[in-house]
Length: 223
Image 1 (tube, one colour):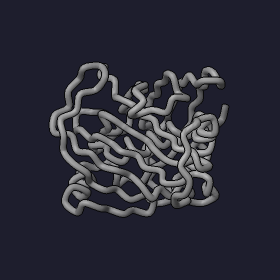
Image 2 (cartoon, rainbow, N blue to C red):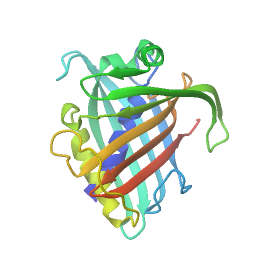
Image 3 (cartoon, helix red, strand yellow):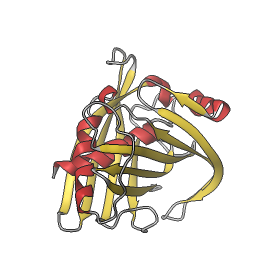
Image 4 (cartoon, rainbow, N blue to C red):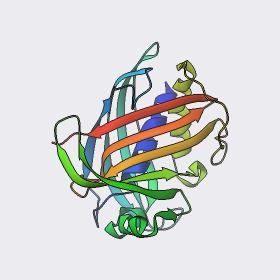
């Protein structure tokens, strides 16, 4: 089902947004779904995804960028197992260590593609038992999917599964391009310098798709 690709591109957006590598090309990271109801909607019963920064693009659509390749594997109630892969580009700026420092110092940073807001610093423990002390939580919102190559398609493919969730909440602010049926999309990330590629020890997505609440939480898997 095409809807499955949405969450993973969004997850990758969050992870890439806080990467600490000066040259992240070749780095890869794996994530596993946290099934707890506090983090994940009941429609998703299992899942994982992998991400890799494959190349630097000096003349990207929005300036120097990096290409990200992703693969996901989900098990959904009613829909069964869903697998897929794809690519998307993000601007070079968000891969630098200076970017997260800028967000910490200014509290809110707006780019052409999204807004990053600093939340809090906390010690983090992932589901595989790994610890990431003094992780910085940031929230990514106001995501303009029309500005991120490949991301808009993924969002529609993944959040379409939301129609099967029973929780509902009307209202919200439509975001980016032709994605008016997806509202209030937020990606919350626990950022730590020891996590490769994306920086996110924990990644939580939430939003409203066609009036229905949706959420999914993922933890980094230490190799």
